[in-house]
Amino acid sequence: MGESTRHICGISGGKDSSALALYLRDRVPKMEYFFCDTGAELPETYEFLTRLEVILGKPIARLNSERGFDHWFEVFRGALPSPQMRWCTKVMKIKPIEAWIGDEPAISYVAIRADEANRKGYISTKPNIESRFPFVEDGVDHDGVMKILDDAGIGLPDYYEWRTRSGCYFCFYQRKAEWVGLAERHPELYERAIAIEQKVLLDAGVDGDADFSERAMSGRQYTWSGGETLVQLRSRRQEILDKHAAAMDRIRQVRVEVPVLEALAEALDTEDDTVSCTVCAL
Ligand code: SF4
Image (cartoon, rainbow, N blue to C red; front, side, top):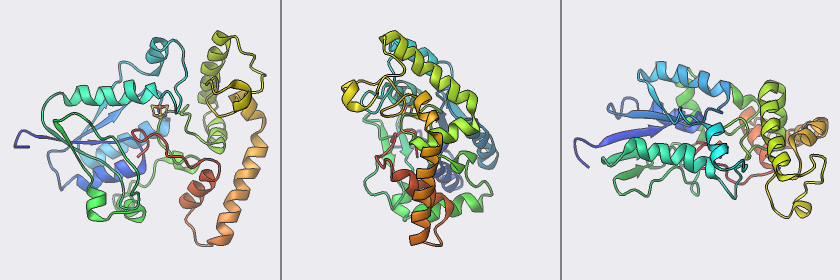
């Protein structure tokens, strides 16, 4: 890696990658920032990126903006992306990143925190791209990230009020309470997610009122959220909110001083703590 080596930092719209961009702003003056735009990000993410650009004093390159989800959904013949078939990450994130980098030598800075020993971000297999992990090397943990964001005066993107993972509004990694949060904050986006799901059901000739439990559907992916359609999920809104509130209360009883974001993350993890998209949510 020499003088011509590019230095790149991907920003997902999440807190860790945003903090890393700020952390490296003065340490790596040649840094190029990028964001893979699926065309389906939350409005809060776009708004946050605009504010971040001002503080960074540089534009954040938007990759993939020509070909968003709708295009690829057609290419994949109306198949919903899922944890088992994550074509979305591959075609809307990884390929555009690698095309943008090309064959020049590059150092990619990845926002894995010091307290996330087992997590992996975007780590290229291309030989010209070397990955570095400044937060791991410098011992920056969750509190360190929050301090960087506070010190910069930017704080968190607003979606952290109900959702802890960045990414598409319809991301299948959302937990039930996060879907309810989307329905309440952005009913039009919830309706769009329903419309995509209904198209999948219609094309497959599956009744939207069917029992979508895993056993009944033998593992095939017809719905964004496990075991039910978004229409069915919405009809259980109060049940989901009550369960979520009870989980928050339990956490607060054990740890009275717990910050709101931590309580929210833990409560959501009680439903599903599998690692979400390792490229999209950092
Ligand atoms: S945020 Fe979710 S839906 Fe969007 S590209 Fe990533 S994994 Fe796929």
